[in-house]
Length: 267
Image (cartoon, rainbow, N blue to C red; front, side, top):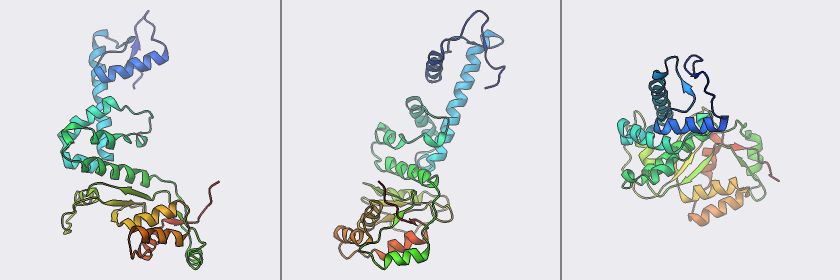
């Protein structure tokens, strides 16, 4: 905020800091000018605060649209902007780091009455939220080929770690399909999907964050490995979830994406 933008009226003290923060936050929601704030021309204070309030809303709406671009594409820019204002009023950022904001947006969409007929919306938002988290996950070097081969030689004892970007999302809708066909330039010829899907999200070696639908066996395999099970136990659990499941294609996919890391036992 420019130093000359606000000043304290001569003879009028600002409220205590917590009270000022509360009043300012309330004013951003309902437009009430916080006490103790004025401009060089006092009559301008309310107008300037309205401009500031609008800029905050526009900035937060833009941040939300960048984090959930598919949702904006699905509902349209104007609808998204109106919906974002409602979300912003109820879910103010708690940190100046906007990457940490928006984690409640999927739940907001799930309970948003105008979208009650589109249950996949909240789950598409879950995918977009998970992609952002995966992209910003910690950097950890993947396991080298020799150590991976050594581990695979004794699957009854070997455990492997998964990169912190790896996420498995069980979904009750075809949200992976909806997300995929709403990517810029997508010309998918895949037939329309129906029913529940499970999404695998990770950050690959090229810092891309693909989203793919995986089978129940693959999901069980990945979750078991993430819980510290041996490769053999994880494969057995996957076969129980999906008879005749072959773990090799998914393990190869994880290896090629750089998502297998050295296993570290947690205390």
